[in-house]
Length: 212
Image (cartoon, rainbow, N blue to C red; front, side, top):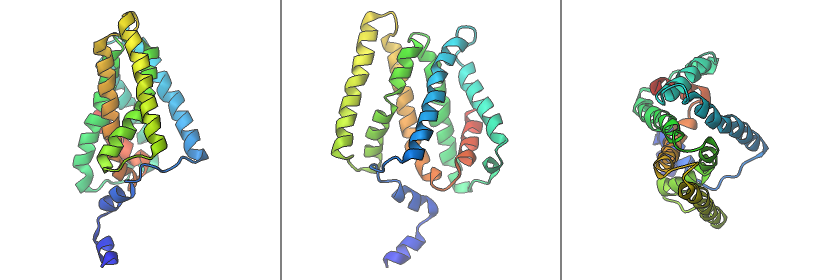
């Protein structure tokens, strides 16, 4: 009976079930990939700050999505087909995972220093841990729970003095940053089952096309 029910599951159902573990550990390759992503993603806040000095904030989400789409188009694996039943999920991802945070960050950096934006963005793993625990209805490990609490304390220590000081951040900008982090966290959980089915380039090309 169990083997029959397993066979009757769709690939997406199996991917969702497999992705429910929130306590998987990183290996050396994952840490290297995370480091590379941190460098490229972290530098984006400085570049956003430079761009919005001479261009409207709406240019940033369009530019990031469009040039990302162009770059991914030249990756052969990116043009593999996507199943029809996954298209609605991709539409949601294009809006929540890309378009919204891509727009919220330049809005925030109009009143928040790029350094503060970058440090706030460092809180993404904390937000993801909380949203994922709610999403899969599974509590994180004790150590991860402690890390989440420490992370939230760090967010407060970064945001509160900056708002009180008034020169490097204001409440509106911090709210925009918080919403962007929430969008990323929700988007990651929506994308996780698809990431277990499709290659990264295949998935990301469709998402940035929709975002564009």
